[in-house]
Amino acid sequence: NWLEEELILTGSMVNQRRQEALRLTGRARLNDIDLNWLHVISEGWAAPIRGFLREGPLLQALHFNSLVVDPFNVSGARDLIYTGTDWNDYETRGRTRTSLSVPIVLPITKHTKDIIEAGQNKGEDAVALYDKDGRILGLLKNPEIYVNRKEEIVTRCFGAIDPGHPYIAHIYSGGDWLLGGEIEIFERITYNDGLDQ
Image (tube, rainbow, N blue to C red):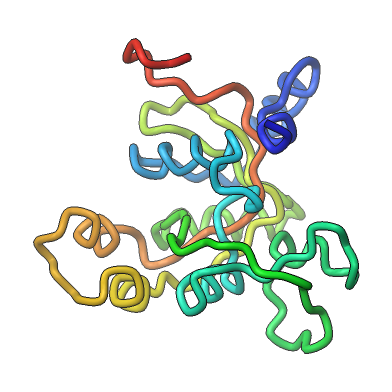
């Protein structure tokens, strides 16, 4: 898988990026569902995305069930979904749409947001990603923090607000902020459940 080769680091890059991650102020802890999404992204199952959605691509996924892309850079917009959301850019346009009806986002708390912003204020342009047990998983590059539109996500994806639905409950229990950006992970995500192949 071409995307997996770009997102899962190998060789000397693993140690180099791991050392970089250990020095970062900005850190985000992923719960089990976040880890599952990281796994999906890292192995290319959500191509063309290369990380958790930024605000612009999230709104495209919610309202159009697709993303505007330019994979061959015909219009100069190849990196449109990988750069920070610029609401004042009316010129850059992708050439085609690709299906994406499920928003793949990373909710964070205000505390995590403050820590990441403190790192950004020191010039950091990445966030270290950790699992719930404190194991470092990788980096999220060029982070974009924005408001978690919980009700909009729920109503656009499910068509109703049902607090008894497990995933809706998960969305509402998430932090009030979302963290978007492209990922690099240090090794393939495994679960040690006998199914890791």
